[in-house]
Image (cartoon, rainbow, N blue to C red):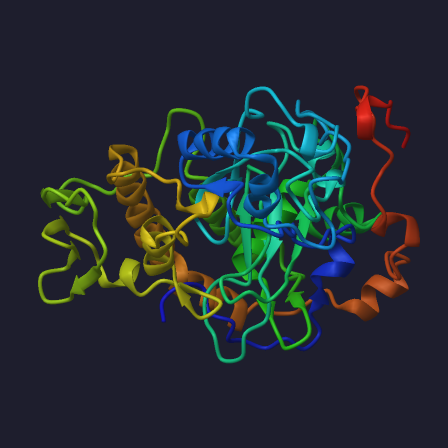
Length: 404
């Protein structure tokens, strides 16, 4: 099962919670229709919700204990949405935002707290162009794949198997201010390695070497500066791929290995198959090749990434629900996203042997005992709580000012 495996010794390793102590639980949407692979569907769903008769609107909302037509909620930080109860909602759909819906699946979300059972506003307050989120994957017995994923956009945070993980922002404040790192840790590492160490290096090392046991994600910290440098370089590559590149530079395979559409995809595909002999992805009568077996077999938390990505775009919503409002035919942008996803998974699978070697032979470690002796551990309680962040006024329920 290609992908970074969790083999390797975990003795004398450090829990990720002791390295990056502030973490947030995954978002809890409570209903699926405010999330979609394309923003146009979300705007159409919102319009259908607003124009429905009053007695039908409550049914379309799919109410929960946390959210009903009469629940008022504050605006999410940095977003513009109404704060009156949904029974009186009017106006255009709040502008959808890009979010990470599970491993490597970028989708769109209506950023309206009246529609989301638990939106985790503390994450929205620190989400900006400088932020990086590490998403700790939930534990699934005997499942391979990465223990931690990175995202430059706000992650929903749930693992493919539905087990709750944790979301760890790299910075506690906007503008890459105040790293979410246990006080004294970076200085201690810098003293051992003989050079400065920053928070992004630590995040890269976690991506390269972090593993998971039944209880938590654990990280080996090498005493050898050369091992650290090698792991950081490997982790930076993984981080770049998790983020789909930076700016205009996107992940690409060399000529001859790049996946292409060899036969047009059908307008309404329902089946995804893989031909190992031909290294081809079969989507109805459509065909994409070459697709290496490593990309097809890439799993996270026991779930094949490509199959789940496809299923989330082709599973029909229940008739009469807002989730059934979706594109009538397969949009061209989805094909481009699929080609890029194949590329990313292929390149990540190529890092697997190096990551496995790094985790299984990290050499002498800086363990919990040394960190306690140096005064880095135990983690101060304040480091595990969110910072007080209020860069701009936030509208509370019913238009009141929100005090934090």
